Image 1 (spheres, rainbow over the protein chains, first blue to last red):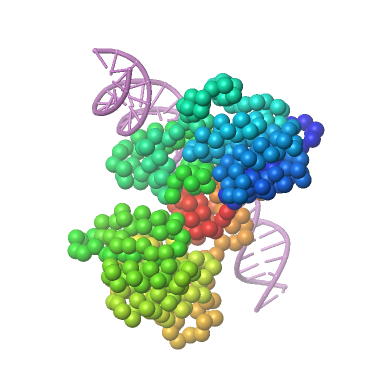
Image 2: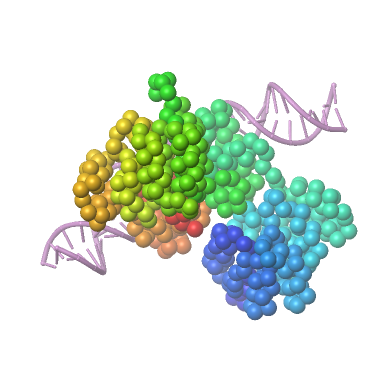
Length: 224
Length: 224
DNA sequence: CCCCCACTCCACCTATCGATAGAGAGCCCT
DNA sequence: AGGGCTCTCTATCGATAGGTGGAGTGGGGG
């Protein structure tokens, strides 16, 4: 964390919660500075040319202009900008289009804070992709492979490991504020089993504890 | 919990999260059955005449028709219905109007699950008010006292104990999923102090643990 | 001037959680 | 039939969280 230049970051997402959640964390970093936020692609293009950020976290599904279009436009004007596509479990299909449009990588919205920060730093260092070699493997193929293949392989990424039905159920109960014992009673299984499920949920979401997981799930609308 | 007749409950609130959160819990009770939900006063009046519930949990601030108006109309048609006004920290002033309109009591949206259930049962038993004798005292005065007096005394209720500034700050950090130690670092206080604050926040919100408190806070928009 | 309140800190104790490392049952697909 | 996956369960252990019962500070109001 040498005191060179702070990484200038711009956040683009139409969900206020996402912006605030991520923005908050970015604001805490010594090596980063949040230069601006935008809630749609059009604002993002404007914001980019105004603030000339190093890294942009770009949501895909937004009103007015999508993140894909915005990525394309920004890459035309400011090709040095590192754009990271923000995805949820639901819109992984856009990863492909995003990379095609010039994004250097992607980040799941429910990624752990550490993952997010490391992704930003890696993008700034000019690394094409992050986390796992598997991810790198997948993305290096993007330019040449078919959509289906990418989608299938992306689904295997540790980052994107989907929750099983039972795990989603468990997460939902967690989000109601129930303790393990209460969840066990409600679902008629042992507390130990609940712990097993909770453990895997935390792993998959990259969270250290249930509160963090619940916050993440609520903010990303994974549960009610 | 004798197997007599289940208490028929209708939920009225424009916030989906509130309806789902409360509705979920009500659905779990052996002695209650959720007969319907409505998202504004007009729907509530219709729903009431259709389902003839025993107890209605009625939000105040809603589009189309307020909970106060709806209460008035329902009491005209179905005077036996027990209507409980749902309030937040912010709209306690409506308690007075609600009682005037025929509601039998009120419930804070951030009440503990147990509080909510007990409130519904008490309302069904025909009790005018619940929880503390202080609350009973306050509300027995409603018909005769001025608005200001009621408001001031209501503010003293344990149900409505407002969070101090610092406690709100702590709650906000909790809602970001931070651990006590992290909160301590961020706010530059000791972990013990954080624990003290957390303890009082849990007390005031009537929650058993931080996850429950965070869920409550998020659902009631007490924090971002 | 003194009291109340919010905020801070401490120490001790217990409950709950989360990590770890298994293992067996049922199911689907090959 | 066998492999893989999900769900179930067990047991142990260290890390957090939460309860209890204090105590000291500073600011604001009576």
